[in-house]
Image (cartoon, rainbow, N blue to C red; front, side, top):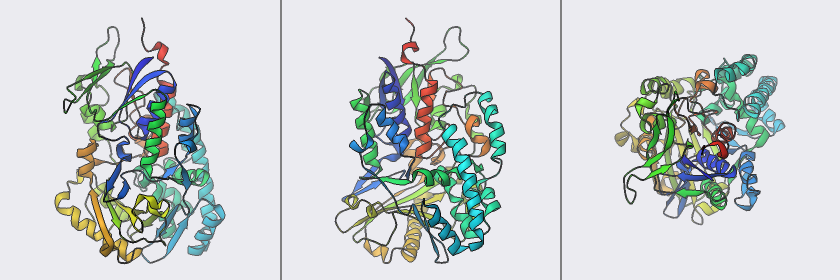
Length: 506
């Protein structure tokens, strides 16, 4: 078996490692931290279990495919259950919208808020379904390595009006301002401002309707653990506390581009600059960090620091994890709390990069589905607020605590009575923490913002344009962020990484 190395054990990295191992590579999965999962890692604190990162699981068939590669079934490793409603959306004026995958139920909710928008919603839903079929079902696992790949789909992109923004597409069909928020917020789940990113991402509405919104019992960490167990049963090797300091490259005789030779681990702890050889290296690390920090400048002709500096990066995230000594049985598993400002707040976050006095929030209450994530009679939460990335130069050491207090006050007033007096444990994560702890460039939680000119061929390719033998998986490459996106990026590698029998020549 020929060696292959995968850097980073987020969902994209684990999926890439499983797929390489299934194809006959001897795969080593390297994780810098003391647990697998990358941004899908887990906090355990005072008897509570908190998922640090992604909590919304859609398109579970992509998980099933990984287990099927080894002749296994997902259900034998982890239990995945549907969430109902998908989201409960609470508006600033006290109204709410229960968002499900049932067409009749969504139409009834639309009619309750704005009867005149029912037909417009149906037209929007048809458009979202058409986009889903072409942009996700047909193309999410296809490489965009050449301009020709992009040219072949360009007529479809024009036909589907991908030059529109998500909000423009929604607004063309739906007039009520609250409903425009309901059906355009989804691009924020992949790091994009709905007033700026391509309408391709309206497909998320159709994706959720087709395959549902799910949760892994035991939390996202249980799903990570199941995939790691599968990988190791297949013969793969996971190494924790193994941070990669450098991707080793060398100029190849007669070749225009340098080629991968392996990696060098960081010199710390019991690891002393260890070198691991491989002609196939997949980076699931932050893409900007991969190019800026792990590769020498002389080897990068396309993805130079200057070019990476010109890219538009996603927002950052302020996340407050907390546990209470009581439960809130009337809560949904996923709740969105929306301020009356929409376009202006998003401009504060993405354009002006200032920390606003108001916020829109995502409240995750996993103990609504799995009470085992907290001590008996208690509730585990995290509340997430989109904030500027590190280009905003916010002093989080001064701002974090007052911002957290303002968030808790808002949650208490809108859906969790007497919340603050019942909190027994808490922890904060800021863009600054994400940049420091996980080497995420600028603390941009979703890497590059998915605008039209930063999607498909315009993103860093799954096959590195600079280095032979280097491949990319994860949020910073095609097709983009979100669990379905990063799992699909690993699937793309099946089409572009050569079979192991031709990796080396004797």
